[in-house]
Image (cartoon, rainbow, N blue to C red; front, side, top):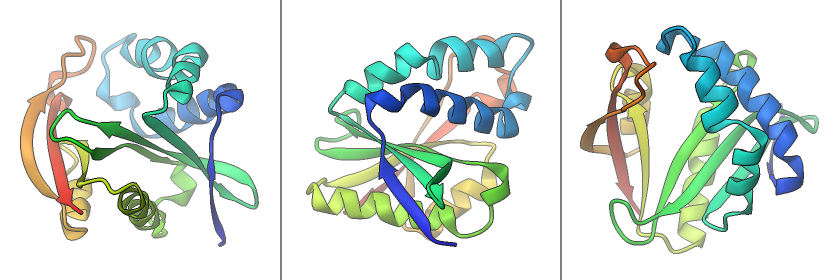
Length: 171
């Protein structure tokens, strides 16, 4: 498979919204009590107006992940000063379930690192659910270390899934 990583502009907010919602439904509906997933997808995170605003924010970088020019995932990077100055956050790596386990996540992590190096960022950070043991092990294998723990405050999310870890890798 020839992986293509293409920048997303605000004109593609509707396509991004549709893709994000479809992928979210494949992986994350189990996190929510009744009504929570719909609120999260259609109002909080993936509404077209929300994505348009994020795509127009120069601190955000979105990329479609494509095969034969057809998007099957996306990557969101965000310049942040939450933990340290000049840090690039890998905010989302979402892939269609048909493309999981094929090494694409690692390629996207290396792509994000190359962006951070090119932008002269000091570090990469990301957040993961503390219940995602396999993901955390994957990030550690790539050189990330847990630096903080937090709890999501989404009332409609099941309490067992609210724990988060922040991982960091110095560049």
